[in-house]
Length: 186
Image 1 (cartoon, one colour):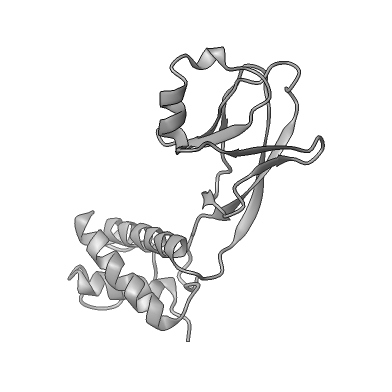
Image 2 (cartoon, helix red, strand yellow):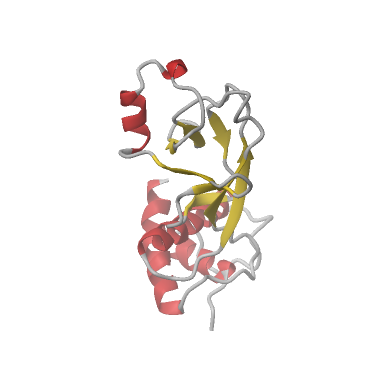
């Protein structure tokens, strides 16, 4: 039987000694602040397990359109991380953009004067301060309008009481245990 979000929240809050009897809903509770934190840490833990374990993940495609003189682009609102298919592709013109070797920190270090780099981007990195895709060059009017598509993992959003966890009850029990530690830290 798949564990529901309500069951997991009840187990977590019982372990944390926040409640002594099970909740019947996830809203309108005297413990609402704790319920909200519990849901958040459960979702965070599921996402973390998904990055290190081999279980089916939901993926989607996002895109951005190059704008002249713009180096950074927002990711999709439900972005949970990039998939293993980390190249971004202009499917109309056949261009690809690859992860910057060494990531954002290396790009930052390698380009002390970012405005000096213009033209067709070849590399990207995820800016950790604003979670935007940063390109190694600023597109010019020649590149403006090109659309790049990328694949990404959907962020976990268990929110309804009846939502179920994407793995077995045994794994879910371990997720609840890990989440209870995170809950106590929060």
